[in-house]
Length: 420
Image (cartoon, rainbow, N blue to C red):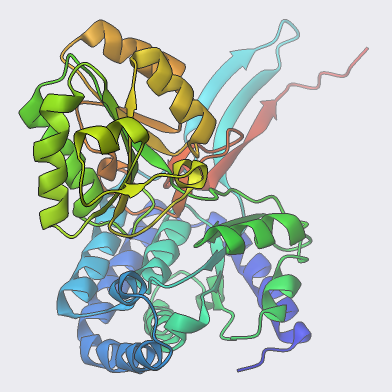
């Protein structure tokens, strides 16, 4: 389906106009709307699943990878989780209007630093239909209008979810035009959206590295992004072996097709011969392909591929794992900072001094001691849903939830002061 240049521009204009009205609404009005939208998803469950089947049929015809089909699928449970996510977002504290600081100048001026919405946020994403609902909920709660541009693989699902939620807004105080969907499979629609810096205040891309790089290179609007999730777990010689196996297995196997899954496991040389045989056997039983360094291949002599230099910087998003034996904490830190993507990395150790050193030295958005990297998620952090995981360092880093969808302004109160 084609969308004209003028249609995208009109969407941006409508979103900008509605954002002013939205920014003035009370928290209760926004929460009421989220509750209405949640009920609408449940009421229209059969319709949403029927539309999703069209996308799944197209995915099978195009022979999409199993991991992509899994991300694409909507079922009863998935829709119930989307509805619950809207309710959870309604229950979160509203960041808009929060006073971040107040100070009085010697001349009597009183200056407040206050959280405010960005205005209009553009979300460009792939695969996951639940992103449509999550992003609408988060943007509206934080007082922002939203323009959504999903991928062609979820065309019918995204359109259905967006239409159900927009229809629901008609009985609320939130203007329906605060939600816009670019319902097009034409890549040129993205280019047009990325040029609307007069109306759109922030762009957040969610998807593969190629999409994110395209958006970052072509946008005249500020972009918050992460290119890929190359996550590591370092198993120290001071680790509890049973705990380490549990954490590493979860980080790789529980859901391998997501950005917070472990892609490289680093193991201290002092425990490699004790730890690796059982750990790798568990991975093999789960269908994980192992790509090991030379030292790993000397310990595990069969069933392991040779890891190449490229493997250390590859996000597999699949049941594939790189394994490297390292001399100690410093080598592990250097490897992560060299090959990692600044997303999520973990250490398993019983030595808290070593854990603290890891936390200080590794340059990533989310760092863990004795826990799986799979927890890097707005919902798991207690933020509600998330727009995405930012590996940038300016404005937002880590899970982007309500606070990260606001900026601030200074409100200055005087009594006739003039500058001399």
